[in-house]
Amino acid sequence: MLECLLAYAESGVLDDLHADGWPRSPLAVAASLGRRPMMDLNWTVIHSACESGDVYTLERLLAYAEPGVLDALHAGGRPRPPLVVAASLGRLPVVDALLARGVDVNTRRVDGETALHAAARGNWPALVDRLLDAGACVDARDAVTGRRPLDVAVHTWGRDVSATAHLVHADRMAKAVVRHDVDAVAFLLACGVSPNMTTEAYGSPLHVAVRHRRYRLMAAVLSSDRCRTDVRHDGATPLDYAVAAGDARAVEMIARCDEQRRRKSGHASLTRKSPQKNASRRRRTSV
Image (cartoon, rainbow, N blue to C red; front, side):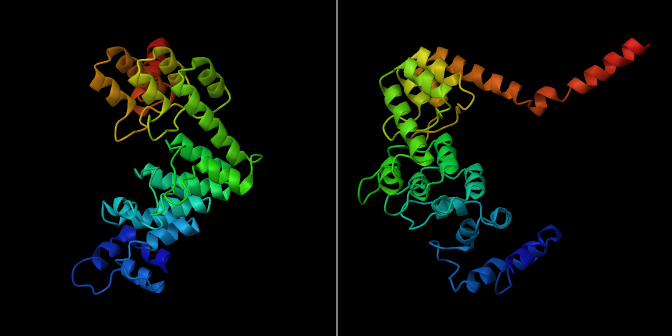
């Protein structure tokens, strides 16, 4: 029924139905089908879409939701934030959709567990790798037993599974970065380990390198194709760290890396004029 209601979105019917004077909006009707009150933020139709893995319905719901609805649903202390719901069931496309809309990858449940805990418990290796690449905290501990995602994976599945291997390698990366062991970091990067995982105390490897002005370590991390410079620790990116410290060299290295990435990705603003130049060149040679 919800999909039928959302199908009218392009015609503007939903806008009319949500207008003042209508006793019940489509979202309220959908919520009532599950016998849930509309104001129960612990389980909404958005939670249901994340649980089912229906990305289309999720996108349509978010398109007609209030701007801060995801922030409210992922506020600290919620029993089941949508991101953790999706991660616990291995819904990778849903996780991608939520992260693309700015949901904090380290959102915690009321018991302190994160999406990485949930993915580790479910043995979803691709999802574990995706969360680590988005800046998930490898040493986040739950509030009940104090277990990290790696502890959850080992306790549930043992060491001989891919999800555990991803977490072991991420833990090794974190330890190598703290030791400023550039050779170990370079080796792990060559093995495909993501350099974007974070720790509660230090942030990502790039945060550590910028904070301590370890330029060799910084260069090694930035050389990875998987390196992301927009990972945040306590709300700040590595570039924010460099600017605050007045480290012009670090700022230049990060800015140059971002510029090279934009060129490699074939950004529209960089490639739009190329066909026109080639066409004018052909006209000149033909004359």
